[in-house]
Length: 472
Ligand code: NAD
Image (cartoon, rainbow, N blue to C red; front, top):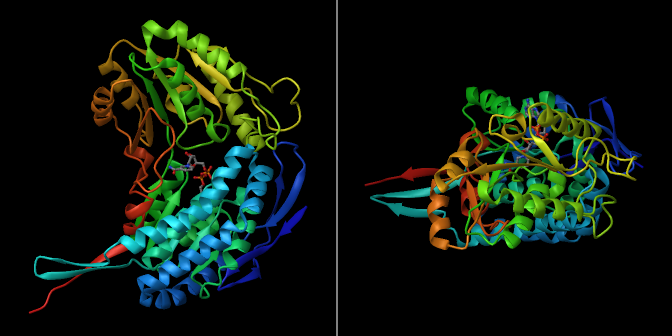
């Protein structure tokens, strides 16, 4: 049982000024595992002031100094990999393999940013001018609950590489993970105020960050709904905003694909992180003529999935993160049936033998049309909709028939055909015959899945601003 009541401001842990206390519950057992006293607006104001002072120092740092900072952060977070993994399992039920990956990724972000910065030209000639890429200023880094450490480290690494001090606002639903991470980051011994961590409510701490005249840039990951509020809130002070938002990604299995390879990959894309992933491939598009075969294979695959204790290495799907998430998934499973889709595996209620904990049955719908809620809205749980198409053009049309456009998965034996179809897809990333992204390539969404790109050079540049200096 942990009682957290601290924010990390100006290089030290301080007791928060807020008074609201919330419980953290282990979603696999429903046991209360911690309490958190949330920071409030005053804490955010203090954190912003500390970052503003540190920005003066950060703006003068050299590339070499920032690479050294990133390497210290990498080592510090790497040393906490196991604690990060355990907190991700305990707080949101991530299955072991996923928790392991996310916690390793957290330290890898700093190594990637160090390499990106080392290779990057911060000053170049364009025409008669010299163009200097300068830090944009103090950054607000706002993260969701479903990938806490990875999101925070990815944003922080790019901010530091660019020379920006920051105020980090983790989700109020990831307090245990944020605490482990804060302790790890503190061990890197960076100058005071270079990063500050304030865990509080969005309408309070988040709003202060989004409106403060001292914050120049917001890097936000979360829902499209909140992203719009943040973009509106930031406009008066003309904040630069990067938004990584909601997804409703399609997995398109073309008729020439190897179905035995494609379908397991597509199902893993649908159920990754217990289905609580922005990039989950939650619409499976298959040729109508192959539907029967697809249904059989999908059913066999899902029947073989281990749902349960996230500590068990064999578990593919653990519990959902909260009771609210459990209820949300039940709502969508009911809605799918009401609107005429047919369940081919799974359904409402908890899996047999898992009455305690926020476990749901991995559920797949067939007979889904694109106008149904389950095909249009982000469910954020292990619920997959199978849609059928008659020809390639219709597959592309269906894939693009959404307001979102984060990622798409495409399966085909022909590279040439896959590349042609990929060029027609409205998505920030298209993965062909694979489901693992390249973490140095730009990541972000088109349409209502976001604004701007993260990772690698694109992530670095999102915290930089070009200054042109021309002289005679
Ligand atoms: P959310 O939008 O509810 O919250 C995200 C963060 O924003 C939290 O820290 C929250 O406290 C804060 N917030 C809420 N209101 C705010 C306000 N008015 N001003 C400033 N901050 C505010 O999202 P969530 O439920 O934590 O996460 C799940 C969502 O995030 C899903 O939609 C998922 O697709 C999306 N997501 C996207 C990506 C991506 O990279 N595109 C990655 C992970 C999650």
